[in-house]
Length: 411
Image (cartoon, rainbow, N blue to C red):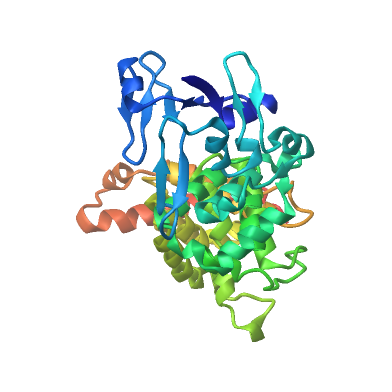
C-alpha cells in the first residue's frame, strides 16, 4: 500500500501557487484495508475515504471504462492491482496527471512538467473525449492560467472540436455546465473561458444567445471594438476588475443579448435592445439553471443600463422612477452591483478600459439625497393613507431638482 499526493496539489506546487486542497490516491489497498486503518468511507460511485485526523480525501487508484453517453457513463475498477500510472492515465490534462510520494519524488509518465514549463494544456490520452465535461474544464483551466501564458494545445483543441461535432456536449446536464461556468467566472481571466468555448464550438451549444453576438456590428463612434461579441467579453473583463461577485460578472457578460435580436437591416444601431434582451437572458439563464440573483441582475442591467449612461439628462421624476424599478430603496447592495455592471459596460470598449464613469457616483448621490426625504416628513404635513406615496415622490422630486441645480455636471 502506497499513498501519493496527486493532481492539482502537485501542479500548483510546481507552479509555486497556493495549494487549496490536497488530493491523495492510494495504490495497492482495498476498502477493507482503509476502514481498518480508521478511514471513513464516503462517495457513492467509487470508494473515497476521509483521513481519520486531517479529513482530507483519499481515493483508491482506479481505472475508468466508457459505458454510456455523457460524463456519468463510466464503469470503474478500483481493485488493489490498479497501478499509479493506470490511475494517472484516466486524468484529463498532463499537468493534472502527476503524483508525488512521501519523499517528494514526482511520478510524471505523461510529461506534465514539460507542459508546465512550456505552458501547454494538453490531454493525457484519447480517453479525454469520453467525458464531455472536460471541454468545459479545459476552458476553465485556460481562464485560470491564461495570464501566465498557458494555451490549449492544437491536438487537444482538435479533439474538443470533434467532441462538439459528435454532439457529446448534448449529454451534459445544466447544473454541471453552470458549476463549471460559475467557477470560470471566478478565475483571473474569465473571458478566456468563453473564447475557448467559442473556438471549439461549445459556445453555440450551451450559450447560443451569446454566441450569436459575434459578427454583429455596433457604431464605431461609441464602440471602437465594433463587434458585439467582443464587447461582451470586454465587459466581463472589466467586471472582473470591479467585483468578485458571480452575479456582477455574469450580468456584465450578457446584458447586451438584445443586440442579437436587432434586424440586420438596422445594423449597426440597436434601438430598443434593452428590452429585447430580456427574453434571451431568460432563455439562457433557464437553460443553465443560473441562480436567481444572477438572472435578476442580468435582467435589470439589460433593461436599465442606458438609463444610467444618460443619468445627467434624466429629470428627477425619471430618476426616482428608475430607483423604484430597481428597488434601490430596499436593495441598496443590488443597486450597487447594478452600477458596477454599468461601469463595466462603459469600460468594456477598446481603448476605454480606464475611462471615468461619473454617472455612477451621480446616481449614488441622487439616491442618498432622495432618502433624506422620508414618509414621516410628508405625514407631518397632514398627508395620510394612499396619498402618502405620491406625496413622498413629489417631495423627493422637488428636493432632487434643487440638488441637481447645485451640481456641476460634466458637459
